[in-house]
Image (cartoon, rainbow, N blue to C red; front, side, top):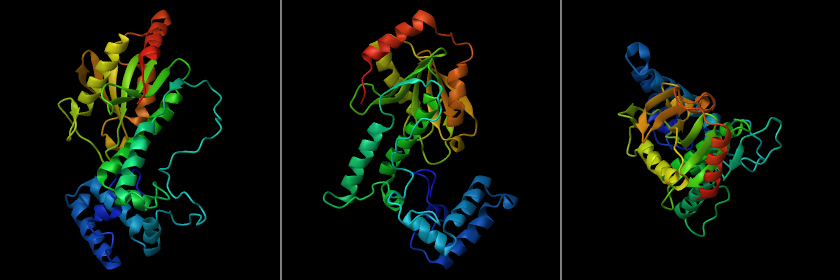
Length: 304
């Protein structure tokens, strides 16, 4: 299974149809190995991706399991075949105090995903498992991206919950128009952070203080943060976009600032350290000031 709903499938990596014969797969694999091999001037990342794709569908039995959305050896009686479904509640084993948390991380996007998936499948058609990998892979990219971002929000929320009792976190915060929101707002001794969790299914590039592409996520996050700042009379320390670790070449990059707030793109594994250590040179917030800001945020924040 792909790591993300929006990741390229092995068929897409090899440049063949999902109905291609085994011989067609093998020919495409061998051709791409020659084209992408680093010793012949190819791209190392593409070379590795081609090998991973072959591991997933190069063997007929493994390919059949992939197409069914089940790993080889999976229990055939298991009703939920995908790790993309919401996690079932589990008893907390870590007894350390957790960050105070409000809102439902990923909830708005999961609802949006389910609504669009039902429309795409067709009203009245059965949809036994909306997270079935084979079904998800066949859906339009826009729908898969919504699910990928929901999963990214949930992963970030797990990191934030472990920050400790000195931090307060609000998820899915409304910021203006009905579909405008901030994924996470974090308040702690190192400042006030507005965070957007994203997954593009591939590595990203940075240019002129922004992630390249059709959207301008840092600019959009800045506009949403401005709405919250006005409503709460609170100043953001940083605007942070969190991406999967393999999507960024650098662990953390400070791109500039928007209205005095540092703009940062960070790997998910670096987020906890960033929030604990803070921005170099930024003022530490504590005591009555921290309590006052939290009170104003709690009174003004609304959820989507």
